[in-house]
Image 1 (tube, rainbow, N blue to C red):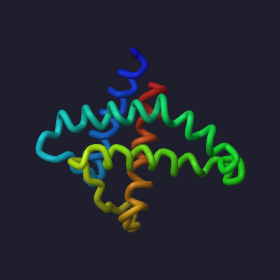
Image 2 (cartoon, rainbow, N blue to C red; image 1 turned 60 degrees about the horizontal axis):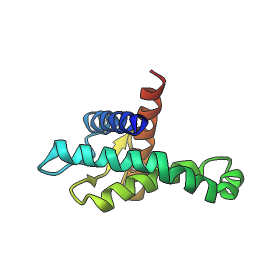
Image 3 (cartoon, helix red, strand yellow; image 1 turned 90 degrees about the vertical axis):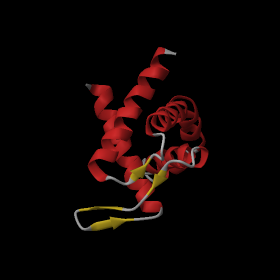
Image 4 (tube, rainbow, N blue to C red; image 1 turned 60 degrees about the vertical axis):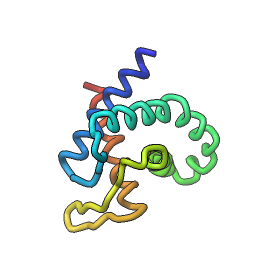
Length: 122
């Protein structure tokens, strides 16, 4: 339980940090509770659903040399936006690359995963 809430806290910081850097996440009118709910859903996905999905997609992961993990993280972000309609992922640009639609989800999930990794090693 302690690990779950630690992950939820890290993910809340990652969501806020991503929003402050790239401004492509919208949390709706009640920002604090939406961020808390989103971080709890992402922590559940990260600790419970993600290992199961990794095992199910192990053959594809071997074939793609692990690149399917980005898609798995994107599924977690899509799950959050599906369960919480207040969260909207909009397009953003990185060094003249405009990421919109599915690629906005991929970029957002990549940076949230990167921030989560950094928070875990600190």
